[in-house]
Length: 605
Image (cartoon, rainbow, N blue to C red; front, side, top):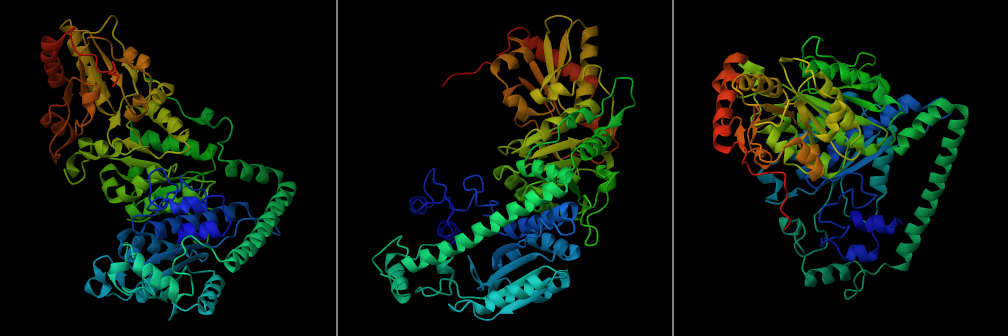
């Protein structure tokens, strides 16, 4: 349906040949639409519930940008956001999270057409989905309209409902349209036409029933082409008028006009990175969540595109914006979003805001609760959306809250997602460097894994070197006997272990690797500078050791769930103390010293 409409309405792609290549290798017409393949596709919405949730983000972005830029007599940003959903979309929890928030925020320019055909893949919805959708959405604060027959060629009732929806400016609208799935086909009204081919015989009978030549494929009637050509001409005229409005706006408000144009182009303000805070080793130790709060606010002040909020953990995530206010129904210029306890909805809404353009959204929660949000976070990466995920309480360092909250496997999970950049900074300067690097990744989401406990500011930490992903943060005074590679809170422990080894005559340097994903992208020459030939490498991270084999000969990590205990006891329980690390390192040195395989020397195959 989408590809057909895009072709008919005059987009350059998909062409008719593209449509013929539906679901084929290297085609732009993938089995589920992907925005990086076609300019006219806003978001990748294959997983049910994501599209309607993205629509909430699109509508929120429009409302915010309109509140920021619109002036009396110059209303540039006032579009309606339309989405089409089905029964399955409304069963997914993510849609409930997002739509609940949309009702609270009174996003009146959001209109959802609900194709209510009572069918999902397993069969009739009577087997699993019998709730009163209308009552549920009205309880969210939505207006719900109904169209009794969506199968007729007379669309006047649908048009009437859309116009009524547009007139309601203080509530989003759900238009419930009763339809028969596969209308006209032999298996109409059954799960047999949900995602399965009709078969050629049935296709021919459907064509015949609708007055088409049953033997012709990919044929567009002249009357249809002429109708859609007239729509394109009308829409081209609207686009030209909007360009004129933008020109008039820029003339009347040159400062705001230049700012809006910068955002449309997707450029960052000049000199924004000059505002990033810096620390010295003499400065007070800070939890990286605390230094993140300072860096976030510096970035927000320098880059007005940044908006976002927390899933009900503002104080714990340290994401309060000092120089802005909440986005609410009566304050849509606010830059801080109260997402509530809705992690999955938060991520999907952020994707919608990023897709709209002109904004860089962030969402915050505990790192372990990325598990709630993963469905949408993965689509951030697939959709090439620059979303910043601020995730605190990143390890057993959160202490007494125990294994339900300690994210042992989450770093490995997130690092495994293509185009997802995971930062785990070791101190405040690396936090600054992480934000700087992440904000430069214009087509990628980033995750900041941040500590609850205070971390010392390291003597040789370097914000600029974070862009390399990893670097030597504790250099040996000669060719090292061993190398530790660590992230986050374990870097300072690795340095302390290296100092113990020095007393035993074992020279050790320490590599901080705040972003494995960025280090993976460096050339071999740089990697060989960091990890020297023949030198055994030991990784140290209070998380699953999965993935460290590519850089470390021996991995120190955690392969079980965590424990509920004070932080020092938890680290001691898992052997992540300077004494135990040094003892393990001696054994590695004894076995591999001077003859370790050079893991960063690639094999050409």
